Every structure is written in structure tokens, then in C-alpha cells.
Image (cartoon, rainbow, N blue to C red; front, side):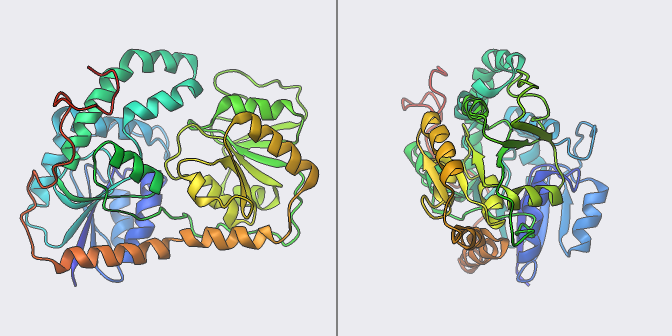
Length: 404
């Protein structure tokens, strides 16, 4: 059986988003390929889980900060990026481990620059991302971004080029991200949309209550819009690890009877919330793809969001939700929908649209792409393989404006 190697972020817990995102795809593809997963570090428990699924783990064995809890993913991600952006430790280690492995290589990692056939980019570089999400951070974090952000963003751009120079083709998960990368002279070969995980997002009731608006609060939330929505008096339930009592470092008024802050919720609780909400409000600052709208639609509930980036591609305006261009329009539309409702047929339309983003759909697309890679003559996996865009300082506009 032909083999495919996936490069991923550190896999230290089955609760990591990286595990929950990559493993369903890898498991689906293991029916057609011998699949191995290579990472700077894979914990023993995750290695056991992968082997049980018929996936071969390849761990770089690197040291990473101990987990404070099972979902403590950000410190390991930051440490992984630091190791590779500054010293290329991840890439060199995995390059040695994978030197003689056959088959195709698909890099799903944003923190490891290692020779591969395909690099699947899932977000913009650090500089542009920090500029858009910065206003939603707590004051202390905003100061940190101002102090350290330019240097980190400049280093991230170098790392971006290091990764691009070691791949033969670039794919991404949204047309808007593809356009942005091409604008910055990275010729993206194609788009393979992301997928819904876990698989069982579906309506929990045939008679939804539709008596509240559901909103998510995270680092990508457009806080100013969410605050304006809260002030309308509309009934809103807010979920997300950052939501319990806090919005952008400022405590939301406890006396507002129309706001219920739920904090982190279980998967089953989230399905109930999606299924019974009138609609899901998703104002965001930076969202290259966005799972919240797809989860909501899978549960039969339309989405109010901005008509840009990933959500602007997955939500169908006037069929499975509403796409707006400003926070003022967002609030007006929310009030109108609360007053007037929407056709009952939208429920099934939402489910149909969400079904376009099942893991099986993504696996079929990746199977065709990987077959093409495996069918062509083998070439040595050593850089530079892909010229990408000239490094900063080469006389062209950098990604990190003002970095020079």
C-alpha cells in the first residue's frame, strides 16, 4: 500500500485541536494509504491512540512544556514555533527521521518547515493576524503585542519563506486565503475546504425553541460588535472559554438580564444550544475558515456573520444566514431577524450546506491530490523545491508592513 506522511503540530493530548482536526482526516485516508503522522513531539498516550487507528506515529521526541490541563495547547504551539522559526529545530529533526520514508508528504503544520510535497496553509502569518485580533485582546496582552509583535511577525515571515522553499505545492482551505497568499506572491495551487469535526453535529430536536441568540466569544471575536448587540436587550447566550463574565478584559454588566454567559460548554451542550437558537451570531476579526458557522448550520440554525474571509464563503446569504459588512448592519439585521424570523425551510438548507464540509468530502479531495503526487516521478525531497516569494529585503513589499 502506498504511504502518506502527515506533518502536524505537537500532539501531546487527544484534547488538542490539532489532534481533533488532523486525526479524523488521517483515519479516513488510512483506508486507502498507509498513513504515518510525524510531529516534533507525540505523547505516549497519543501514540497509543494513533496505533489503535492504524496510523503510524513518528515523534521527534523534543521537550515541550508540561501541560497544565488536557487542552493546554497554546504553550506547546508557541514553543514549537519558537524552536523552528529561530533555530529550525523541528524541521531538521523530522527531516532526519523521515529521510528514507517512501510516499507523499503533506505538511499540516504552521510551525515546522520540513521538505514535503504539499503544504496546507490554514491561516495568515503572525503580523497581519496580530493587527486584526489585537484590539480584542486584554490590555496587558495588547501591550505585549505592541512590544514584541513586530519582531515576532518579522521572524514569522522568514519562517513562512523557509516552509514555502521546502514544498512543491501549496494548498489552503479557503478561496479568500488563497487570494491573499497569491497577492503576496505565493502561487497557491488549489483550495481544499476544511471540514467539520467531530462528526455528530446535528439537530437535537425537531421542534427548536428559537427563543435566544447564540454567540461565541474567543480571540477572533469582534468585541465592539458583540457589545453593541448585547446593548439591544435581545436575549443572548454567549459560550466560549473566555466568555464567563468577561468580554475583552471588561466585565459585562451583571445586571443585564438578557445576557447569559456560559463559559466553556461540553459538546452535547453545544449541540443543544445550536439546535435551539434562533440564529448564531458570529462577528469576527480574523477567521480564514471558521468552524462555528458550519457547526451551527449542521444543527439546522442559520448564521449572522460578516461577508468576508472563510465565513463569507461557507454561509449562503439569504439561504443559510445573513452576510453583512459592518457592525452597525450586523446589529440592525439581528434586531430584524428577532422581530420577523425566517422561513422554516432554512433549517434543511443549513444542514445541506454543512454537509458539504464533512470529513468524507475532504478525504475524497485529498485522495485525488495525493494520488497525483504519488503517480508522478519521484524527486529528492530537499530544498529549495518551491521558490515562493523573495525574502524580505529583496526589494519587494514585505508581508509585515513596516518591518523594515
